[in-house]
Image (cartoon, rainbow, N blue to C red):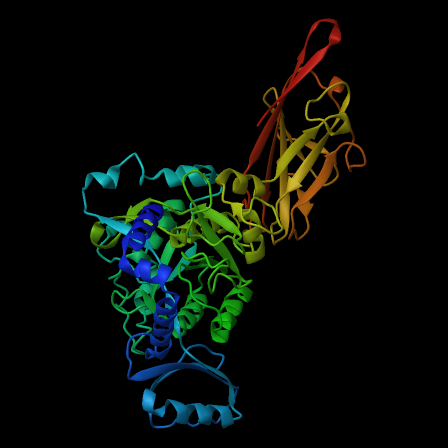
Length: 538
């Protein structure tokens, strides 16, 4: 859709007389550009984007301050427990107030709130319209493209709270209400007027509802905390609203914050809010933006935020998605989703891509709640660190989060031949202590392995045997069986013909499996003259 719109506009531009002016009359071209820039920079800078008669500022005061608020401050509200305030004043008093802030030693920092934008490309479909159920372009094939089905062994996002800082939630859509956070009644705020209003989360724009729908398509049991940061149906809001959304989400205990908006850099208050959320253990996922300026927009460009770009149905980066500085690429073109008033939207944009990644993060955290943001980021990249964008793949995420046994023959060959072979053990990052469970099965008998490399017959021993694991914050590859390992070499000629299976998993101290179980089987057959053959099945 974006390519079609761009091509149409290009053709219209070529046929227009304005194009002729730009092409053949450089003086007129420069004059038009000058007038355009003048209009942009002389346009009144509304306070939080809505009222031209007042300005919004973000002010940080030191602990135990004695700052006296002047009478012309219309509204002030404490944003956090760190001395941060959102303040609204009349435009006429702006310069006087700025001088006061500059000269008061209790003022640590201040900034004028600016606009942030919600960018989207969407077309509405009415309820029960055939396009709502199309199996062609604009269907739910993005679920398959992202490999969402592969996430089933990891979980469904159960118990995970995802804060969606956006345009609210469609309260008439029953499918969305099923995932509404139970504590929502006491946490709603109208961030743009400074008034408390616990019911003001109704989405009049549609963007927040679509983002929330994407998240629960991936993590169907996750809770959604809608934080409405725009006013009415507006497509923009202030940095002050975004800052307050961060602190509210952390205070509510959000595990993930989805940030499907972008804007120019420069807000120190927003950067500090993101740092606070990150250090609180909250995973931050940000849309890179729908205009390719070469780098992700703000706040996705912050180091604490996982920056997400878009790919089309063929896996190629979308034309509107930034090329550099993006960490993860996810489907973001022609995505069919529920919108406001129980309708449907055919939408494209990095907002949708970011929501998919937020859903993936929720699934990972529902399996292992101990995971910290950096390792969630690593697992979303399939266990690959380093620079450059990585295309989101559910099967890779599952493999990176699962402990698994890997068989190697002499010289590191995969095919097992001749005599000895090794069994290598991959351990995913846990961010906690764990107990490794390894069970071996042969002809209906099962054994469990303990710390000393001793197998226990489960038909005799009543106590489960575990290998105690230290605090693991990075993936590890151990030589469990084989040369230089803690356990003896395996020789396939010492094993009777048949099928051997090994199952691995990791529990935390509360006896919860914090990884999926992995099962791998080795079949040993015997041919004439004692020659054996081997096959692996996972």
